Image 1 (cartoon, helix red, strand yellow):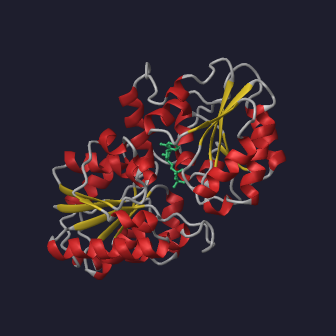
Image 2 (cartoon, rainbow, N blue to C red):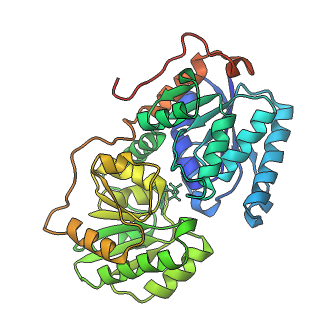
Image 3 (cartoon, rainbow, N blue to C red):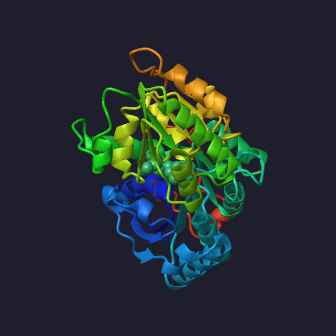
Length: 387
Ligand code: UDP
């Protein structure tokens, strides 16, 4: 079984890291393509999961717009697939890297397996361009590894055959448990700024990066954080994303705000460490919405809608958009009292075994290229949530 694992951005590396490890354990022959869509944000991640890219993307990718990146990545994957015959190309999520690789594999008639399939907002422009990317990958994929029953239902509604869908959970939970185990309880953070965050204040962890928040909405969210810093009992920690649009507004609104610490993007171990200390999280990130429930954290989602409604249904998340009043009120409510308000419920996104299920599926299926587009073998397993 020869597999090409493709990723480009920080969240893809985090979510495919445990898949790489599980495939290795299952004896698959794995090559890794890293497009380099994120470079600095990926610092330390490949080492954490013990991955070495077989192929690296072209340096020019960083300078290009989304269409340019898409084209270059497609060409590179196409070149690789002309030279090496893979049984599967595995992509994750909804990035430009994943959409480009899935398209290239489809046109080369190599079966695509999509990890974290089936997420939909139903609105093609939001999130942009991720909703478009997901749908494109959904068309190209022969196998859809969905995190939840809801994601499975989204695909069934689009006409995907049930035997092509496996409900396995989200691999981010596997990554989180792996990282938490690796860093241990006496972890010394890599970033000295993290190590020196005051322990006597209530930690509010914040991440903001979505394109649709940049501009007016972002400024309103940042003003809310400024208000909260003024309360005095909290410390607001914000690892600032490298997106220049995000950086400019963060500096302008929060540069001199009291009790606000602007940090560099954090190594995953440092971020996991902070989630373990936080009282609440304000975020527009997809991955953080999926991770927070493992810590029992109640979070405020700084978006108008989410393709991860399970986090709200399970009681962990509240949508606050960019509403300054709602963010201030929500954080104050979740930081009341002398103890963190953690929920004892299960994480609706997974149990930490998604990667093992994916590896079993891919290595046991014995599907030959092309054949899998029409039928999957009878021993092919479907995992249903709760089974
Ligand atoms: N994360 C990290 N360092 C940070 C902020 C986030 O390692 O400073 C991790 C976080 O735990 C999650 C992932 O990055 O696993 C989320 O990435 P991001 O928010 O960039 O993308 P999204 O999930 O929205 O696609």
